[in-house]
Amino acid sequence: MLRALVLVLLYAAACAAPAANRDIYLYQGGDRAARLIAGAKQEGQVVLYSTMTVQDGRALAAAFERKYGVKLIHWRGSAEKIVQRALAESKSGHDGADVFETSSHRMEALRREQLLEDFYTSAFSELSPAAFAPDHRQYVAARFAFFVLGYNTRLVKPAELPARYEDLLERKPLSLAALLNITTAMREIHLPERSPLDYLRQLKWDDSLAQDRFFAYCDPKLIDQVRIAAEQHQFAPETNSAFFHPGATASWKQIQFGEANVQLTFHESDKQVIDGLSCILVEPDIDYYKDLGAHALLEVVPNALTGGLTNPEAVYVLRWIAGRHAGVAEFDPPYTLVS
Image (cartoon, rainbow, N blue to C red; front, side, top):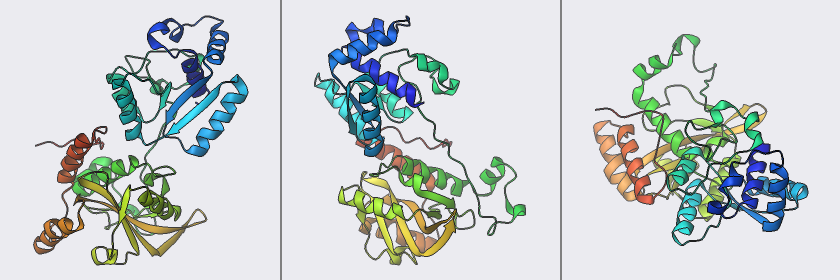
């Protein structure tokens, strides 16, 4: 997979003027590699916009420069920032990036804005058929992310497990919707190192899985990542977090959107060793409102009076609208609302 990305980088360095170089994009002759290397050296550098970590970018740049003698400049940003920057540069007539490397739906957004070109690389033969879009070759998958569910065999009896997905959907549909909402939103948060979802180690697959939140054990490094993100104005700390979340020791809320932001609340006294790592309990949820006062008056108090909980269908709609207003990719949890 890495070879495919490197060859795409090389091709981009050799082809800095897309309209004038479409022939080489799709060229499959035996001297393709030689022509690309010569063109890349003449161009002198290639600029990569990517969500990969700074450390990974440095490693890739060093390997690329050693092999091809071409400087690789890596600009690291969130998926949303990459799209926003690319669109802004395109409107100003400046092509800042030679290569984009980010999530597929962000790549699709760039394709629809006609910022990408069809291309060929011999590394295509090494990729899974699932890496390719059915109707173009303007981007291909360099890696896949798999999301799976597990359960604690000490807390959930085998007889209580759903025999199939439809059973879970029938028994706790709103809890399932909330889980999909929250994990989808967590996936789109780019911390200094990875996303919050990457730090989860074990979901609490019991009655704590509710229609407004879930609990999971996570790598304690997640707290450090969220603290750094708060310093970068991605999150804001919640004071007196134990008032809203009994047993909580710290809590931060995402502040990217006007509504439907992810909140990560930590219960550091609740620990469990998983695969040799001492993990702590984290409680992710999504509130309707970013402002703490509005959250208390318009969400917490009404729910307390009525015995209700945050509605995941409302969260879905609010988060989708908030994303549209912010100009980011469409919120796309893997389910559909029907009337």
